[in-house]
Image (cartoon, rainbow, N blue to C red; front, side, top):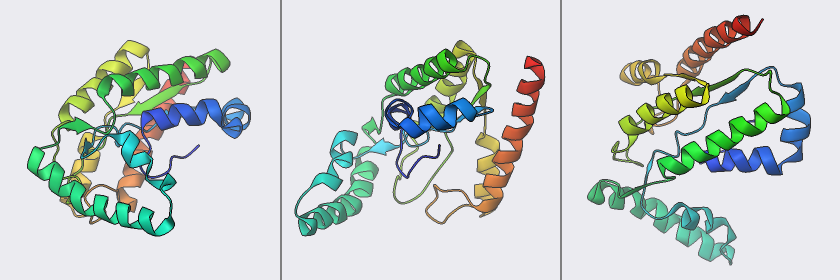
Length: 198
């Protein structure tokens, strides 16, 4: 299962429970589950997420496009001026949905290794505030320890790639080298987890 742009832990939970392809096709055949969500959750929000997510339902099409343009133009300004008053998804909600995912996966496939990643560092004009990042990273590591899920800390890998200019110019999305480095780190940890279960 892969996530679309803007997915939160809540969307991942919905995918697992509402998409029959995910729970009846992917999960039974999976060798491992990687929870690489939470990066969107930590981002500062200009408006409540339910309002942002409702934009695709606005009719007519011309009005919808106007609303989206206005949001994209004003959101960075609002975040910059307020420092980010709220997250896209509150930390407690992130942890609640991730816990539900883990419980559901273990109920169906109790033998399967589950890994998670910490929220990715970011910085750019679209989200000009890192107010929630350090707390989100610490919370993910703590949540992983509580739930028995190995939370792989990707902070240094992504930060170094960003410093080298290997990330997308938007300051958020990774370049190919970052994807490769994170994938290699996950493969090392996953191999260790599998050996521990054998």
